[in-house]
Image (cartoon, rainbow, N blue to C red; front, side, top):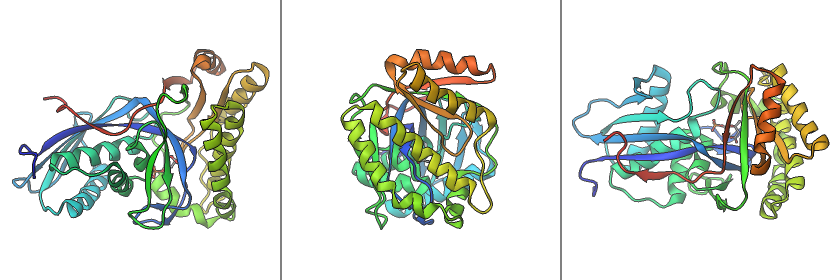
Length: 332
Ligand code: PMV
């Protein structure tokens, strides 16, 4: 162990997928049904400090300064078990995690949280792993966390084993000036989280069709990003989101994340593109909030139009972000 203090801090960003991850071929290892692609969100991040100690009897976790509840604590302990196994230690850890985006906005924090936890825990132990291995380890905590380790536009190769299922940068953060204007429709905690949702993905008849054509969409979206071609990019991103939600709605039991306001926003985004020539498209994760992906030059106009739909909508925005990195000790 080369880090004599056994403590380190790391920061990782949230990400929004253009080609979605939904369903696993191996739930325990979180080996996904299909490869996926996302962009990291520069302005939404988690900062985590991990301290390993032989003197601790149990792992502890605070989130934004308050002791975590039983469910997040159990999930973090399971992830620390996986890291202990890899680091070959039986020490316990004190974990302090802070999100710069408000918890309970319905914006998933598991990707940035498990990426930051993985990077901080490995660094605190004094180990140095390649980005690829950090991505596989983060994946064990939350699938999409694998994509928050590398920077910029990131592809997660589905793989067929722990070692071969990892994410890597497809294009750097400054490759294309895209912005995610997030329309927050509901701040309610989702009733069915994504981990439970992945388990039911195969119970309906549509998942197989979605997965079969996912590699074609991935290929096309990569070509569109490479060429910075928004007209090619937009319909693929919207179709991929619609397909995932069609799978969700036809699973057993069905999962409906869209709300009436989500539909009004999706409709408005299509009109912004078709009638106002704004370069914008929508995508939704496992929740009702609508991520409006647009060119930076159109972000203000998009935000203004979204706000006009309903005063109930809150807006957040972010450009393309970097990867998970060790930072100077937070709060020290
Ligand atoms: O990483 P998880 O288990 O929270 O799954 C994320 C699933 C989606 O956000 C709905 C899609 C994605 O690819 O990010």
